[in-house]
Length: 375
Image (spheres, rainbow, N blue to C red):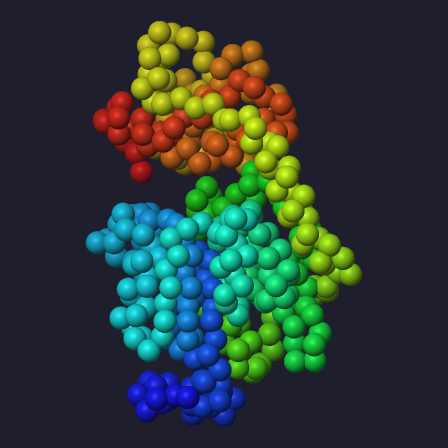
């Protein structure tokens, strides 16, 4: 039941005959898990909280960074260094103190995904990596729960609703019905490696929040079986039809096999070098190959002397340019992209001479060369 204060707060919803008191009460009784409190997560969280979703779970293990403020509108300069989930929780409750918000300061992974997702009615995918996205899909299929998908790429975005069961009991497609196999992060890099227009996640996030409201209240046409693509540069949008595959459940169970494969791959621990160790090797004039896997614009700002630039997404087509007869030190900004490159090269091309520079060029600038221009 809505309180008198809630009836006042949600007056404009109550005036809509498609929602009314009944629809608002449905929103109040719904629990939504938002995975990721970044560019997509911020607008999703703001609008779900404003709409009166009864309980919102925020799962994110990241902290606010200065580079986030270009698009992640929940955060301020004063929040830098603080956990996103805690900052977001505080802001949402300040906006709407009638709802419940749970901050989960963990990364969604195989060990905890079932535990968290089963507590909620709907999942909203606001992630930026394929491993988590496929995990969300597979657990939602297992639990028969819908999830709202969103993805962004520079100036373009995608939205859809997967694993949704409509009022007639008809099940919609899963994410694997459209993309059966998980691609390498090198094949489709995220916005951390290629950039994104700050307004884009705001636009896509509002679409995602809208799909949640439609599913809960039963109004409109849910984006199930339809894949919406939006281009902000050209102001265009188009939809493609997607059907549920007969083997949808079987595809979702692939994650169990993949887990065993990942465990086998992790038996070889990635070799690393600290920036101090690299400095010693350079001063000793050891024969090294320094591989920079950032983008050209990042390389222009700063790079290690004598390093070779091969952007992360160009690695698969440039294997022959990476030597196997000497130590190869791979670096990026913080060490995450370089780790992905090493994993790709070791698992798919049997390299055994690769070292990840811990902390990347950011650590080098901070600890070795404070005069270096960085970003």
